[in-house]
Image (cartoon, rainbow, N blue to C red; front, side):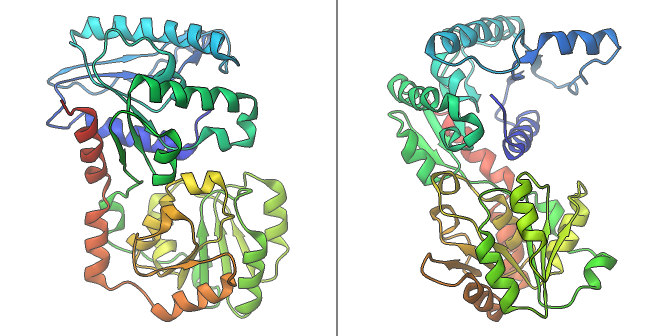
Amino acid sequence: MQRSSAEVKSRDRLVQTLLVHERVAGLMIADPFRLAPTQIAWRLLGRHPVPIPARKFATGVVSPLRLRRRDGVGEFLLRRSYADYDRRLGAGSRKLGLNKPAVITTNPFFAAYAPLQWAGPTTYYAFDDWAGYEQHAKWWPDYERAYKVIRARGHRVCAVSRHLLDRIDPTGAGMVVPNGIVPSEWQEPGIAPAWLQALPHPRILYTGAIHFRLDVEAVRQVAERFSGGSVIFMGPVVSRDVGRQLSVIPGVHMQEPVESRELIVAVTSNVDVCIMPHHRTLLTESMSPLKIYEYCAAGRPVAATDISPVRGINDHVVLVQDNRSFADGVEQALALGPIGEDDRRAFIAANSWARRHDAILDLALAE
């Protein structure tokens, strides 16, 4: 299954925590299936995986290979595929001397169909409702079936939103653990780049993928209401059609996506208001919008579509309901002004990834 960039980053952060966490006495990291011909070619070219740093406890990586790039369709193929994956992980666990280790997986097919006879309690860490992605449409019945099997097996479920947890409806223990932030990134705001300083106020920012979830009409309302200001989009264009529609709206500035976290922090910290004008869908109701946490970590007031994962994050987040103009929400957020410095730092501390990971381990390691 293809993974979202948010899932990959969050999974990698969890691995980094597990490598040093005091409650972890042994760790096996399982890569997703790799395409065998590609991996063999890379090895022949002398390109090998970067080894993980040495630790005081047993640590290893298992990288299963297979001949097809994507999962098969249907329960029979998925069971066969993930039984094979499970055998390799079981062998890796025994090699490391792990005794019934707790398992945390972000793959619903693995959680559903891996036999896991070698393992202890299994926790499915749910980032997205995969049955809501159009590009995964042929697997939708399989995801629905996998949720039922996860439920029947009594696996523990950690979901990034209440809607997603309710969707899976686990019979085992369940917990909502939303996305978090890296406190060290957000302590100091940084200097606004020259291109941002040249734009007129109010500066209205959206960060993240330019995707079909964006409400273009809401953006148009904002650009018209604040025609003397700047509406800035900074992120990769996933939907060319949405990107094209945004680019022709007067006052909208499409910036190239950047990898530099320092630049993202500097830009976010030096605008007047941040926005999240998303359509309300099953997919957006299931997500935990990382951008909202980053907007608040930067101390910015926010206007966002009123979806359940955004509620209660911070009182400087203005929720815009369906029957209301998004531009009104932006105006209200601007009137609130920035989050006070003491409150901003308190928000960063309360929503760190370290706290999120502690909560996940509380669930995964519970007796």
